[in-house]
Image (cartoon, rainbow, N blue to C red; front, top):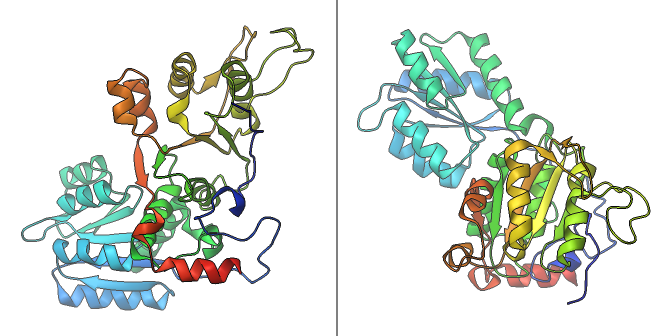
Length: 353
C-alpha cells in the first residue's frame, strides 16, 4: 500500500460527496453573524414573558416553552446554544431535562432556575452538570452575567457562522449533525466520526476545530491506514536522532506539533494493535514518548477520530481494543451518506459547477 503524506489541511478534494469549495478556491464573502439562541423553559407564563423580554433586549434570539417535553421537541428544530430551565416542573423536572439534554446534545449548557434556593438543590444541579444555578426572583444582571459566561465557555461568543462555511447542505439530518458538532466544539470531549468514505468526516472534524476555543492553534490530520506501522509511530509521536536507520535528526510528532490544537486520527480502525496500546497511554497520561526517547513530553491536544469501519465488529474480532474505543468514543457523530440527503445533490452540483 502506498503511503499518503500527512494532511494538515482539509480541502474539498478529499471528500467528493462532501461539500466545500474546490481545492485552492477561497470564499471571499463576509462571514454571516447570527444571534445566540436561548431556549427558556418554565411553567409560569409570566416569568417566561419577563425572561424573553430581558433576553431579547440584549439581542438574543429566544424561544419560550412551558414544559420539558416541549423543550426537547424545540431543541431539534430551534437548536439553542443555551437552555434556561425551571427546576420544579410537572412530569419532568429541570434535573430530568438537564440529563436528557446532556444525553442527546453533549456540550449544551444549561442554567437552572428555582424558587426553592436551598443548598441541596444547588449541589444536586451542579453535580448533575448544570452550568449555573439562580434563584427566583431572578436578578437581571446576574442572569445576563450567567448567560454571557455560559456562551463564552461553549465557544459561541467568538464564533461566527463561517465555522461551517465549507459544508453545503439543506438536509435536516445534516443540520442536526452540525448542531451536535457545534455544541460539542465548545468542550474538549473526544469525538468519533463514523460513516462511509466521502461523507465529509474530515471536513466536519475541521469544522469542530474551527468552532472550538482551539481554533487559533494547529489542526493536523493523519491517515492511519495509508501509513506503514513504523512510519505512523514516528509521525504520531516523533523520534530522537539515531532512533532507527535514517533518523539523522530528532523530529517532533503530530501530537507535539498540534500542541494546544486538534489531532484527527483518520481511519483509526486500521491502526496496528501495538500503536493502539501506545495511543491509549497517551490519552490516559496526556504525554508522549518519542521513538528512541527516554523522557516523556507533556501535550495538550484534542483528539478527534474517524473511521468507515464498524469498530464493534473489530473489537469482537480482537482487532481493536475495547478500552481505546471507549476513550475515543466520548461523543459519536455518524455522517449520513449522500443517499440519505438526496435534496443536497442539486445544491452540490450547482456549487461545484
